[in-house]
Length: 238
Image 1: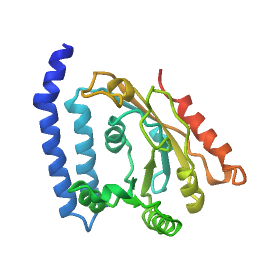
Image 2: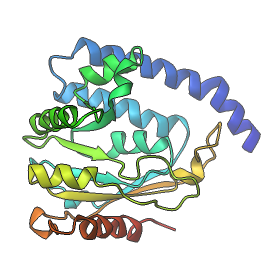
Image 3: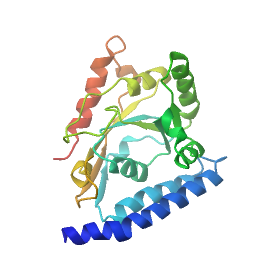
């Protein structure tokens, strides 16, 4: 069954998913004046969920009741796999924008689609550029629009949660927004960073309770950052 599953991925699932990716990008670019409309959001979520469906991955979600409708949040998630992006995009029940490296803007087609979708390219080349990026983030995160950040900065090498960087905390602090930790489980087992194909494995996403701005330790940010990391680790299913 393992080898049939691999053959299925290369001959059927991956080609179909590639076509769906191109169609989703084209629709997003065409509808760029309305990046937050319900239809565009539905198309993007449908595209993301198709990865789980086409690869027969059982996806379960808990903690959706922790999200208050109409409230903007900074979501922070552990980064296990490439699959994380599609699981969060497809099953997180909010409209959100990724914070992306400025270099991705130059990737043909992908950069145009991400810009049309309203995702924010963060430029850290200078303090002035970083400040301008933060101002752009501030314009986006209103009226229930959220953002999702992988504070580890890269996918895990061994399945363990790495050290969290300060970026997500700084944005939440500057914009006075709550932080919600997301705990992903099973993505590493399904497709670690060295894998060339997916191994069947159940995937779970837990949406934690909000950490409110008044709970932030502004004098010692690392205390809050470590607290957020511990919340993520606590809810990872073993």
